[in-house]
Length: 490
Image 1 (cartoon, rainbow, N blue to C red):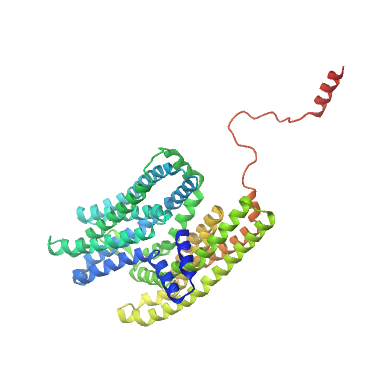
Image 2 (cartoon, helix red, strand yellow):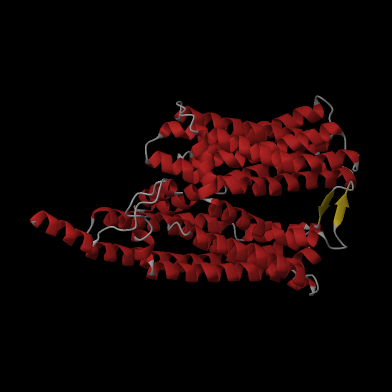
């Protein structure tokens, strides 16, 4: 995200109303626009193909298929994306560009292998027990792998600051998906739901292919050092765990409510809880602007001060190091609290609009009872994620993993306890998890501020570590030296 931050500094540096609006639009286009493009494509398909005319069973089967594709592609890709991102960043910093291709190959194979191993038993069960047609299940499986690969390749392109190309790939692919859905429906005579599913699967695979080809064009050489990538998996296992636990925490409260007696089971396979899932989706979009605000108001300022500190550490005096450290943490605190204030105002405005307009659009009953509590939970969750990124900045993988354990663990236990509460409190488990993780991360950052010197200067080793026989424990024997001197005198 530093690439966006640098560009936004140039835009906001003009200090005009036009530049501010352009800066907000720029950060919006290259952060959350791809996801909104996919949703826009789905809504266009709904309207043009007549999705509301589809039978209830087929409609729910399609909705659950898309829901599972998005949730589980995020879960299966999250463990690898963080460590692969670090590997690529390190090699670019070391100017060892020939090591990037092994990273891409290992990351792609590992990601797709794990995703396939987890998905295939479920899809086989869907065929054998749910009696869903094989062609429908295979298309869903390919859409799942396509979106998984899309999330993986987005990491490589983001590090290369290819944000414009990523958005361009999404727009072009979703336009093609929309046109293909019309072709499949009206020219080939396929069903409405299968036309939409097949078109989206092709779109996801196309996005992944374009992203992969783009990043491969930047790194034509191959060092064949594949074991080094696997070595990173072992060294940075805490980074893998923290990113997975954070992603798991976003959805584990939904999984808990999927087990309730009033859940929905489609084709004896898919399980969901429509009121809770829809309330979660609405709450997430109520606070989605935090992603834009975080980049436009926090990271673009902090990144500059972080660079000043690292440069002072490399070649500065003690006074300049201390001053750069104080300036960096002052900026971190001020920008973090500024994010809280602004996002609170934005979320309240969006919430008030949602409360008025959503019932008119058909969202009512249990959905609107669950929605307020989850809106608070996602508000805190997005703020917590900004702190988690700061922990990554300082290479505090232990703190990041502890943050993930608190977030996912409390969300699981709290949601189980919230089942017995009134409907308006169903989201309190997720809200509590977000608040506790936010509080932990905040005090962890304060602890890093107090112990940053030891964290930076005392983590290395003076003597090179090697594998071999242990040297003699006697470094210097004063008595033996005196004896030798006496003999020499004689």
